[in-house]
Structure formats: C-alpha cells, structure tokens
Picture 1 (cartoon, helix red, strand yellow):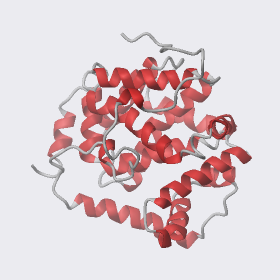
Picture 2 (picture 1 turned 180 degrees about the vertical axis):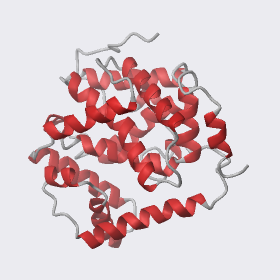
Picture 3 (picture 1 turned 135 degrees about the vertical axis):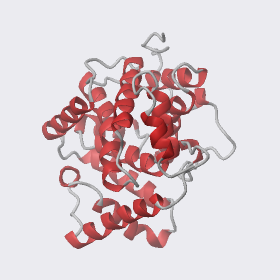
Picture 4 (picture 1 turned 45 degrees about the horizontal axis):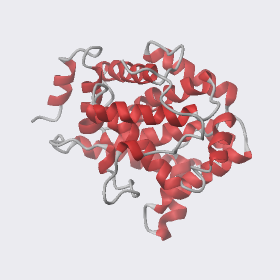
Amino acid sequence: MKRFARLELLRRMDPHRDATEIYRLSAAYEFPWDYTRALELALYRTYAVPSIGRLLAETAELTERTQKRYDDTALLLDAVVEHGFGSDEAKTAIRRINQMHRAYDISDEDMRYVLCTFVVTPKRWIDAYGWRRMSRHEIVASVVHYRTLGRHMGIKDIPETYEEFETCLDAYEAAHFAWDEDARRVSDATLDLMTSWYPRPLAPVLRTSILALLDDSLLRAFRYTPPSAATRAWVRRAVRLRGRAVRLLPPRRNPHFARQNREIKGYPYGYRIADLGTRPVPGVRGCPVRHI
C-alpha cells in the first residue's frame, strides 16, 4: 500500500453516510498517536472553564483517581469509534456516559463546549503536527460523528459545520476561561499523571514540554509561568519533526485503538464497558436519552 492510498480511499467515501468509518480509519490508521494527544488536550482545555474544573475537583475523580478517570474516558469514547453507534458496545458506552453526566448539574452550554473540543482540537493538532493535514472528508466525517454522539447524549443546539464548531469553541473560551483554584488542582493532577508514564527523572522536562505545547489562554487561566520562547519553539519543532518522520514510514496495516495505548494502565486483565466510569448518585438511574 502506498503512503497516501488510504487517503485516496477516504476521498471516495461519503463523509456523511460513511462518517464513522472514515473517522475510524483516520483515528485508528492514519493518526492514532496524534488523536490520542489531541483528545488529551481537548479534555484538558475544558478544565480552564471554572464551572467544569470545579465540578471535576469536587468529584475528586481527576485529583484522587486520575489514572482511572483517564482510562475510563478514553475507553468509553473509543468503544464508539471501534464498534460503531449501532453496536452493543457503543450503546453500553453511551449509556454509561449519560448515567455519569446525569448525576450532576451540568449546563447545556458546558456540554456543547466539551463536544466542540473533540471536533476542533484534533484538527488543529493534526494540521500543526501530523504527517499530513486533515482532508476535508475527514473534517466533515468528524463533525458528523460527534454530532451523532452529541444527539445520543441529549446535547442541544449542536453546531452543524466545522466552522460553526470552531466559532463556538473560540467564543466560549474567550468568555469563560478564568482562574479557579480547584480547576488548577485538576490541571496539576493531570500533568502529574502524564509525567508519571515515563521514568521519574524525566518528569521536570516532560512537564515543561507539555506546558510548551499549551496556548497562552490556557497558561493564563491556570496561572502557569510560560516556558521561554526558545523552549516553546524547540518542543513544537520536535513534535513537527516526529510527524515528518512518520510521513516516511509505510502506512499502518493494523488499526490502533485507545485500548491499545500504553498510557492505559488500569486494566491489565481486561474490562467490561458496563463497569467503566463512575457510578450515579443514589436515586438517579437509567439513561436520559432514548437510544434509536
């Protein structure tokens, strides 16, 4: 298979009818490492919205059980990608996501913003650091995929195009990014988790490298001291060089899903999708969205 053969295949597919299949090929074959990093960053961005960061701190899921929360989030979202919306696995994953969200008072605006991060952040990351830019087919398919997920989650007023998702995200961050002490605790715990995946002596370098990849609005919201301009340029150049190196490799022959990531640490002996995530508070049962 030639390096761009799968891209040619994607362009022959219908980005609306075949949206989830295109998204699966893009995320599991073309850019598995990039999608992992981008979706980590997407979720991390949401902490800078105080209403989201405070809630995550209050539940203690991301400050006391950080690895488990990371694992469960990645596995639940990826079950939909790997198996498709019509599968039992995806239905179970979405049901668990809805059960968890229903247990808390989360605004429609915050839910819609989080969905926007899933669409916009990967596109921006891949265009900046991937071995090629995302094609229009992949962008449209990503929009359709997450619009479908959003409808299953009962999110209202979902944007219809990538441009609308991007406008919604940028406007929401401009209006809501702000300092919050609890959100900073969630951010610190997440950075500690990410550095824990590698040998301990590398932790300071890795933390600085992660901060170097964040934009100024995030650094200001969490009150982190920005790395030097030279450090930011070096780190970003290194990630771009990785993408150029991947471009020289033969195309991936087998899919790589989130459950195969080395960062997933909590289930060495396997897991059941129905057991993932937090449990609802007493008195709140079932899924708030009827599955079609």
